[in-house]
Length: 212
Image (cartoon, rainbow, N blue to C red):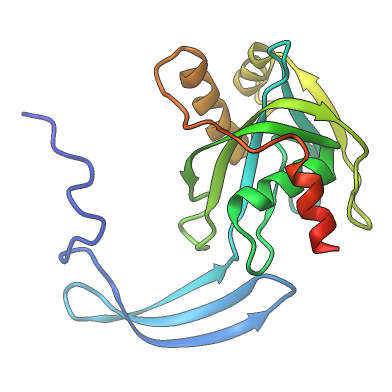
């Protein structure tokens, strides 16, 4: 049997569900819980419950010596400290690149001269509409951090092979970080290319000053 195309269309009519009614069950600081009544492809009706998320970014920071910057922070829902690439949610009206620059500077203290958008991932498609844009950063310069109130995390410089071994051993289990490591492996091997753009190392700081 010949291989079939994976995505001939993102909206195949024989699979698409249509919204008939939407109710907001709960609203939090940035997450909203919706309950939709939908029409299934066969005409029957069903309920769908999901979280609406504003979207986020993840940054894969490349140090000049080849190591990667990661963070270690406690994640309350899983009751443990996790190893992750820097990430954060989009503020209203904020572009993903500006968000990536801001999150990198605030959480790690680093700014980057060059940035490249790798792609997007959907981490919880069964119960949330969240998307995370994947960005690479290089030409890093260190500076002071500006953590949010109540935010506590460690910044670590780690060899990529060490991170991969940690994935194998079940130490690194964060889904977005696993996706980021997939991209890093392919980029490092020259199998996937990135559209690098030089934005200047001071761009994140200037953007943050404008926001203030």
